[in-house]
Length: 219
Image 1 (cartoon, helix red, strand yellow):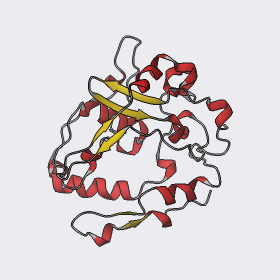
Image 2 (cartoon, one colour):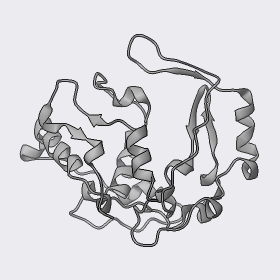
Image 3 (cartoon, one colour):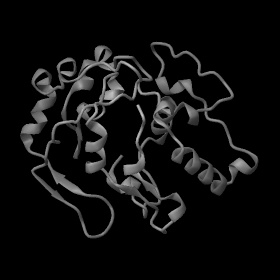
Image 4 (tube, one colour):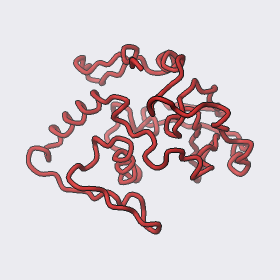
């Protein structure tokens, strides 16, 4: 999701939210509808048709009640609550291009894609990834609202040269052996050093302060 979509002053999200909602259902089963079994999707049907939206009633219809519920649920998530490979145990075997690394462009929008940073979603242990690709230039306006990057034209050719622009995952990492969220011993230290150390609302809600350095798993 773009940086502007997760900022504290953002009041809306654009795009196909139905796909985002279905993605959440697949990777976070605890947030999916629990009162029915998802139907089997035929070869000519959209995968999102597995889920049927249901209207909210009673106190659950109150946005403030739902917001408080989802905040508590997100704060209490553990690695075992995530379905790391919901579509295929080895997705790259079914869709080889998912191992492409580089820029994915649509019209004038380009986003960097690097599967080495989410190896657990391919059924592999997460290792410390290599340094990310860097844009030719990046500018962030003073006013909130996003950023502008300039991508070298040579990056566009990578999509058509898959063999030389893909993560050779079998050489890069090993399948997980004990649990789907397995990492190498040095990954969590790297993650804490390169990620946000604290997550805090803009209004200073100290009760929800989370120190990511303290979020460690015993596995």
